[in-house]
Image (cartoon, rainbow, N blue to C red; front, top):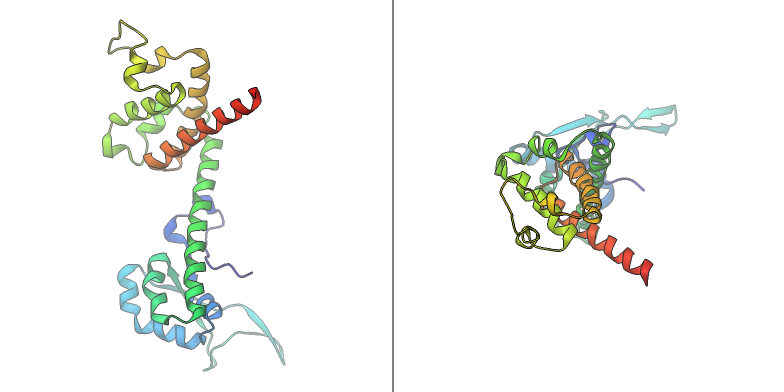
Amino acid sequence: MTPLVLFDSLDLSKASNEDFYTTTEIIAEQTGIIYDSVSRLVRKYKKKLEEIAPLTWHFESSMKKGSRGFEIRVNNRGNARKVYHLNEQQTLFFIPLLGNTPAVVQFKFDLAAAFVAMRNELQARKIARAVEKQKGVTLHQSISEWVHYPRHGNTWHTIIRSLLATTVTGLTKKQIQARDTDWRKEKTLLDLLNSEEMERYKMLEGISIAMIEAGSDYEPIKTAIKSTMTTKKAETTTETA
């Protein structure tokens, strides 16, 4: 099956969302529209497309077998065919211009799903790559170097650590602090965790570091932390049942 979304990097984990694109060739094949018509429409709206992002292309280099052996694929004027690349935002503008035939509607759906799948795969690979590199990287260091750090600055340290502590204990921050009647500011929530909770904390800390290193924002990290702990509790319940 022909992939609907492409990228040029050999290493997907080093790519970015902006690197993903589809082509006028894929669009023509999937919608059943003559290639020259698709290409002509791109040229017609070239300025609009370039307002979204630079319009890139390549000359068709795939070969087809002709009477004299393999020949370069050409357009109907005998020239090497220019194949345009459209990123996700450009396709959002361009695809509706093709009309609403059943084939176009299906392609819109399939293409949107393909872009989402590629983004998810990119994020998964970035996290996997970060997990491999995280040895020796502390949570404090990863937060300090986080791409989202400027938004809240040092407050992120408290936010992330509170998330981990409240998740492993099932208590609010105030309830954890209430474990010690002599609570002082120089103490941390970690000082009030028992050994079992501390073990879970370290596990979630590793997940947090990996996701921070991968550039994830806070909400996806929070969701992953909460769901991981929920899964662990479910596994424990099953084992003891």
